[in-house]
Length: 207
Image (tube, rainbow, N blue to C red; front, side, top):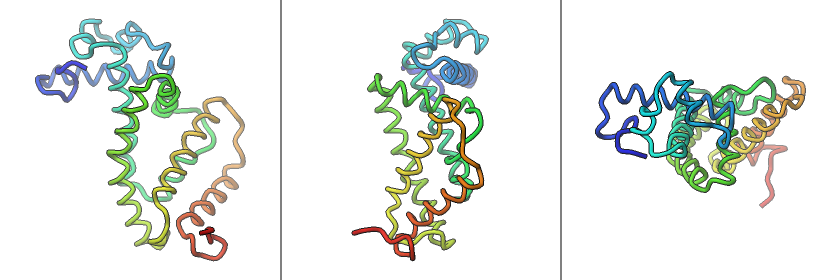
């Protein structure tokens, strides 16, 4: 990526505003067309800008889409610190409804990561940066609220929740019918309670 991209040294406020416009447009096109189908001209048209606006900020389509992916990963993470555990679970375990642009982009990014190692590495790096502080805060809040015991394996819980969320994006993206929302919510609540309280009756985990 060039040194004049959004938030990069050397970019003035106007350049940053244009860069943000490009990233928003890239996210919409990426969510709609996927990684392979997203074209620079489509992004330029969606942003209402010229091709020159892209190439003075990004070296290639790959750089632009990668920046857009990482921006959405960070935006997704930023919603968690101010949310309750129940709100996060309700959002990440939603089993019905059309995908939002952010969700569609998440799904497309993970699909692209299968064949694009640099996207896989960038997603992993971004998740490592926010997952630690976010998980730590949720752990403290969960223990203080009596929702989790200190001996729970919170890394395992975080991995489970992320995996569940991605799997549900696949199901929803494919238009698969969802179970009864109330029954699903009750089951998810039980599963998370048992994982977060491994020593409670009915939640004992094998050594």
